[in-house]
Length: 301
Ligand SMILES: O=C(O)CCC(=O)C(=O)O
Ligand SMILES: [Fe+2]
Image (cartoon, rainbow, N blue to C red; front, side, top):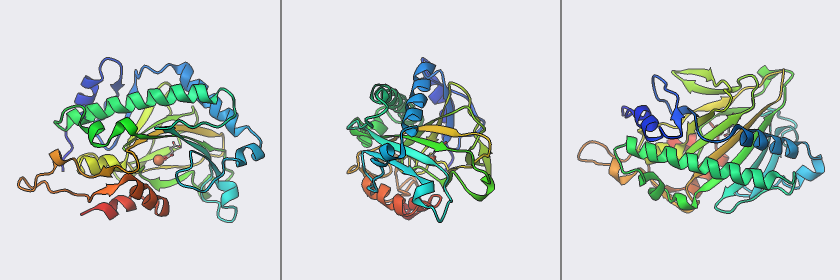
């Protein structure tokens, strides 16, 4: 199905504080500037994650659980897969909403991440309102259908140290996010996030004071395929450490996710393209199967 023309609508809807940079075509990604978030908070958030990664191994190991829905999880590809060093990254992932979790150290982590994630939620909801309107629906449609008052928000920092042989490993393999949408901030280092665009891998430059927005699989399902989730990956470099800070928004785990009924009409030749699922089932399936868009493909009718 052809995409609606969301860019004008998004830019118009958000003109008062959030502007998207235009691209000639819309393929599940967008950069946002003038988002109203002060640079100071972005820098403070990076410093707070740096403070965490600088803790001793013993202090970090405390958070090294295996549970999928652990409130705070630290992981490292080096230790976890010593025989198979394919994914060269450290990460810290916290559940920030509906219940806010935070590591005990560094001491300022709580205050900064609470403010940062609140801002990211507000921006995400603004974008979803604009997207609802771009689909010809009232602005609250997505947030109501996906029960976003109780949304699951994850805050993740990925740290990719320089890799002596970057061609032999990856930071992250090609994947789409299971989220509704993901907002990425990246440190000012060589572009290593790449998105699939026009059949090619295109690097995403780190532009200061901008965020990169990635649409996730739940958006593709809810919009009945009008918006596509974005395939992306992280490659490595042998010069400098790169950090990304990622906020993802998803529905509550028990929420039922399906194409919005307003976008399905079998008489007009717009059948539902995806089956109904719970977000919990979706995330669990994705954990077992991270190859490209394989879980989304499983949902196709
Ligand atoms: O490091 C990045 O830029 C992207 C990370 C990512 O894709 C993810 O955490 O899902
Ligand atoms: Fe991702």
